Length: 316
Ligand SMILES: Nc1ncnc2c1ncn2[C@@H]1O[C@H](COP(=O)(O)OP(=O)(O)O)[C@@H](O)[C@H]1O
Ligand SMILES: NC(=O)OP(=O)(O)O
Image (cartoon, rainbow, N blue to C red; front, side, top):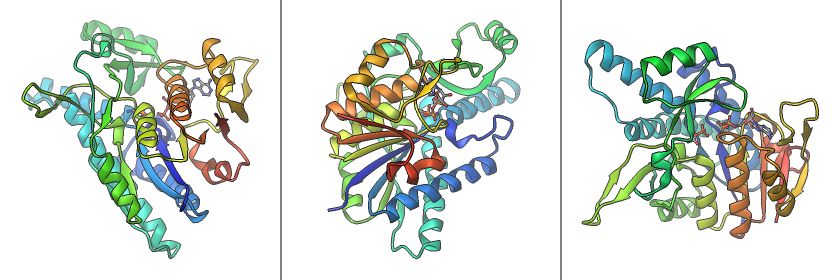
């Protein structure tokens, strides 16, 4: 039985340069990432791919708002913007993976599963937006945007600029997890839980309904990995390793840490909320739920990291 790996690709890691955010630029980044994921599969692992959508869902939402302000076009609700990103990013990953499989002569096919994720309508996150989406703004741009949109919440995202925040409830259940596992057991390379999943709530009559929010894809990927009994959770983001004292002269990268050490670093506030902290929290919950190992690294280091030569490795 092959070891099962969940690889979670960060939405920001698909945008190499903030001045290059076109669909074509993103596809080039997806192709680069796909190359390294195919390399992991060649090493003998079964891989499920999940992905973020922070920048992309914000771009779609803003485009819809401007189109509705300027041309009176219909507004696209945030939950639908998230569903759009599952299709658009899932399509790119699926195509890039299939092209890689063909190039390498691998008898493998990728498939994207539209994934709903149950959240609680009473989650306090709905009253306190915390998930950064869309573009990065300068301080002056953020001030102007706050004046124009008094209901917006903007914060500095890990020193990279100001971003808009939206509610991010905790994922409670991956609705399509059995289908994902079935496809994996048939040998498919599944792409699922895109953008953390489409947030849904259960109504009184038992039916489901989408709700405006963006689920953290690291939390949703960790929940999926735990539920399906994955061996390894890999979080692919824009940095090769997790650091202590990030962005300061005392910055120090981490190679190998235990769960207990990682928890201690969280308590010492080494990880920025909205960026590295959710990744670390997702890893903690995966290892506490029975996972054997977690790795945090960047797309280009994926194969080397799985082979144990780079990345931050976290053990129970
Ligand atoms: N302690 C830390 N170590 C490494 N990177 C950190 C740390 N704290 C914050 N970061 C920032 O967090 C980013 C990853 O978060 P983010 O860009 O939101 O993820 P994603 O790739 O999932 O979109 C890194 O690229 C880095 O800029
Ligand atoms: N949904 C989500 O967590 O996206 P990012 O990984 O892009 O922040």
